[in-house]
Image 1 (cartoon, rainbow, N blue to C red):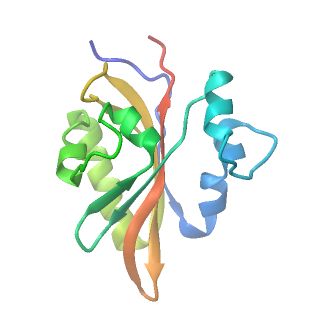
Image 2: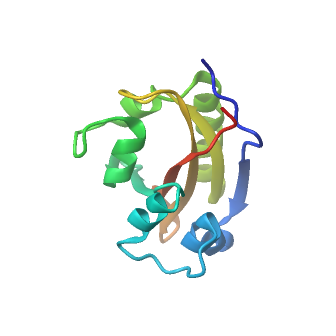
Image 3: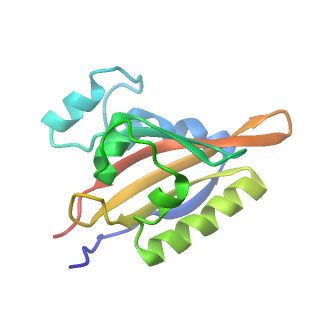
Length: 155
């Protein structure tokens, strides 16, 4: 059964807005904007989403995920996952929107925020918020990095 998200997020933003989109307090409405190791555990106890950190090296599309991202996708922590395997877990419409925003982000040096429907390997379908921004070295974008977390739905 397809889950419905009340007001999905889908937008691109300028890199100078990076801090606003990545600040833990902005995402989870905390009093502090500082990342602390216990934040994920505190968030879970308060019924808030657990944040996962991720990176994609653009030279070879190699992914680096925190444990929380593996959990979101229902994949054993530490498993080798290719980008193609991860993208295959996105719903068709979500995959198309993500690929379009990803290409735009790389071409125009912009970040993006997008709610996507995923079909985790060992869990039910769910909505995930994807926050991404390019990392530049000189004039070249070398990787994308960001945060992922499960978004509550109306179901």
